[in-house]
Image (tube, rainbow, N blue to C red; front, side, top):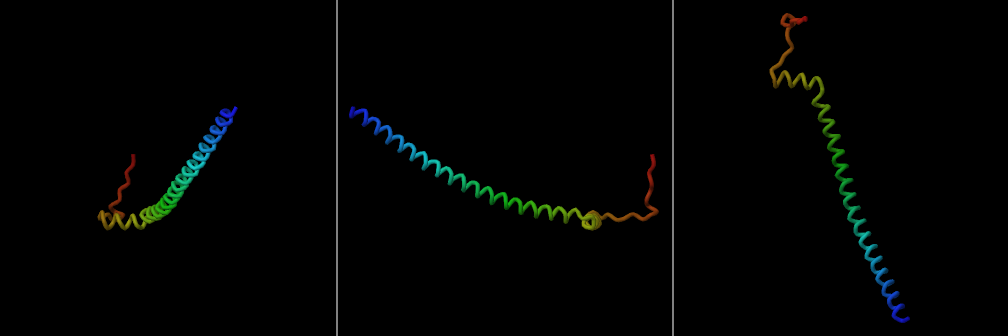
Length: 90
């Protein structure tokens, strides 16, 4: 009868130790995942700021006056004179 009690006590001790190891492991994984979540949230915020900057830059480059100025300056384009315009009909 004594050996049965000792076996039960040993099994309960192993169960408690296993449970404690599981709790420690779970807390560790939770902390690791929280650090990863924080890193990803920071990355998301940084990408949001960069996206806003790029949208503003795109809006600046897409202004008609900017396009017209670049076409005239860099490509040497100009507005044709009325007598140089020809209407093409099908």
